[in-house]
Image (cartoon, rainbow, N blue to C red; front, top):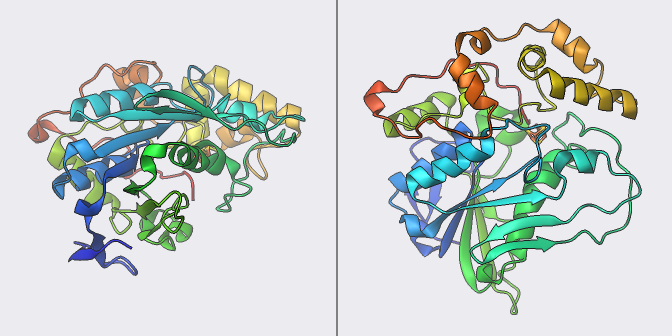
Length: 341
Ligand code: SF4
């Protein structure tokens, strides 16, 4: 276990110490492009971690070159962010993304693709055939809410477990879950061995720790950090979304379904067609059109046409870093935070 040295600025059960960051060969930040993952990176930099030991890892929920669930601009925003901070970013994805897994019929789980310093690698895809034909469940249980595990957590684990550069080395995986987000997340440890850790294997000696550096942070503290650095947040926050999840997150609120129906009617329709095909709605009770009818589209989607255009484009063309004195809080900063529990 890594040495612990300094006190955290904000106290939370089980999180009274910081790992000794100087002992790691590499620090991997699971970077969604959302405010919490940005805050994780900024915290590492403020703690003095040299950039040449940090790498960002982003998981493409819809896979490479395909778009159904996610904000079209997210991949580009993440790339531009990495560029602005002079950091490497590695993309990884389950082939065919969430849509292929959701539609799987008598087929094995798709292979996982992951970028590495030496190019793209592929792993898996030879498992037993199975049938899914349903949406992920709206629950904290990652076995039935399989999108988070299949499209994100397992993808990073596959990328780590299949790169020999992580063997005989010490690696820290950093993720941005916060206790304030949900009762389930409040129970997460702020520091523990990562699920890919094999430090006791004489052959691998793969030491991987997992740290959640903003677990105790409030939303206010996260935004304060982002303002201090003058980082422009993902366009979704300027459209009133309080959290950067998939654009069509299964946990979307009625207002978000109403907003999505207004700004992305084609993808809304496609997802509802799947509800009809599967005879299974994303929500436990209501169909997508019923959810949208119950909500009111966010005013910001009409008030911020430039941000809307940006959010729905494949290319992020605004700056990432601006003068902190000119930085303003996005409309959705403290808005509805519907998202993974
Ligand atoms: S953001 Fe929502 S839909 Fe996307 S992977 Fe997470 S829980 Fe699933």
